[in-house]
Image (cartoon, rainbow, N blue to C red; front, side):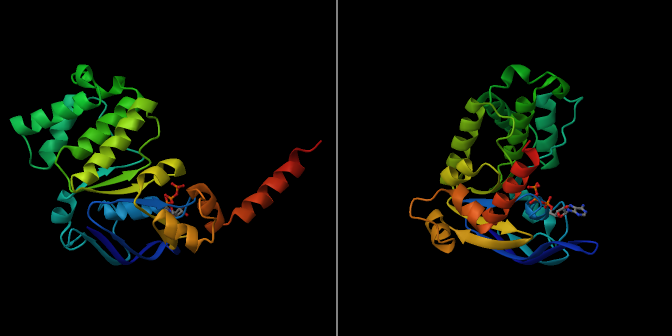
Length: 257
Ligand code: ATP
């Protein structure tokens, strides 16, 4: 469904993404993890078609994101970590606006918007301005807007931040249902329990390169972690947990009186 071949992104002299090769199959939830500054958001923004790669190819459902962005992007719903919502629109207007951008208007899109708002318990807020929405409500509206044009794949950057436990659970169930219906999810998060529970396969990147990739079992053997090891342990191992111990030792020293 999604393929990255030798994708490089440079910001001036700095190379944030160094030749990424990834394949995400239809019907799977693929976790994309890594420490701060690893290049996750940069990669996600290239897949979303917001950033152009410096080198390499990105294929979405076979369509080239650089050569044929409109076809590729129509397959995609993007839930960014720092979204921009139009404060002076109501939730209902915003969904209508987004549906319109995809060339979907009229009663069918309206009904789909209403169903999504209902799912997220936002129906009674439909005509209220977004400026009056809480953080979690904005997040739910954003998720609704990413689903409005019936995408084949959803790209999610830190989806759980600010959601209450009920909404977080709903989103997890929704992601599972989405892939069961043949959709695909590319998910970036720092919440490793969520990634472990939800993802079929995971790639861990560091300094712009994949350092481990596969199912939980494959990651365990790649990182030489114990049989039942959780993702947190694997993540810390492959991204240099020893360095963290060093920092903690330094901090201890600094706070000792
Ligand atoms: P986080 O988990 O902290 O969100 P990330 O894995 O999403 O991190 P990116 O935001 O992709 O990381 O950043 C990767 C690297 O590229 C970082 O070193 C960052 O400082 C750098 N970077 C990101 N955007 C730009 C930019 N517009 N110009 C210059 N450097 C940038």
